Image 1 (spheres, rainbow, N blue to C red):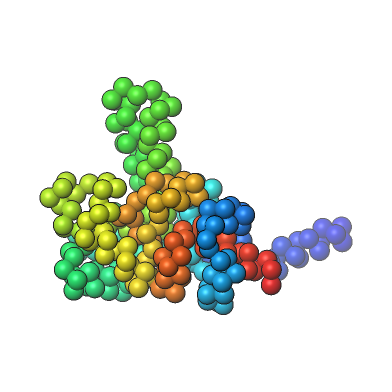
Image 2 (tube, rainbow, N blue to C red; image 1 turned 45 degrees about the horizontal axis):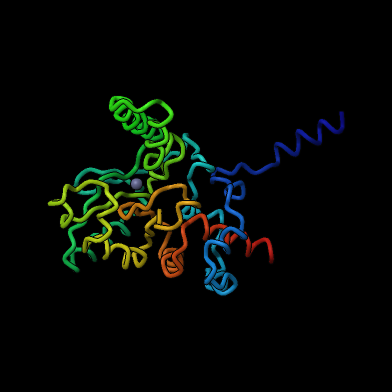
Length: 252
Ligand SMILES: [Zn+2]
């Protein structure tokens, strides 16, 4: 009885975390990071990471196939000029990025931003149905869809911190989300400068094994300037960066 009371008391006293509990993230192993980045001096990079960098920082939230998003998360929204929704808190960063791009003669626009988990599920089904209509069997259609479209709860678009951006220089070539976009001036500019406004190119070429996504030169993710600059400088994806923070914390 006493034991039960103590248990009840403990449960009552436990603080309620509304933040996403990031210590529960499923992260790649540090050995995998070393193998994939043989030239990277891990200790040196860890020294560069801001001391206050934390796995609990909402800007560093990880959503992927192994880390599904809590679908009840309430995301306060704002909208781009062409009515694409995204997280209100990164409005200044997005506007600064667009302005800096314009100053360099690149007209960026958003193709996609915040999506609810339901919208993501619909997206997935729509793409898969196209493949099925083309005559692919169920398994192949799922595989092909899965290469570029995240399953319902695995899209970081549902955080409001991710935007698919293209430049108008790409319009005359169809304006699709296609990897060939990477060689166009606005895409090159984004890869070089987005970090200065807090954004990373989230799915880098050569990191498919970790991100489980093909290279997407258009998909930008807000993480804060100091984190973005380190990641882009060392060609690290978010999963790798978080593993380094965890490794640092484990060895403190
Ligand atoms: Zn995207």
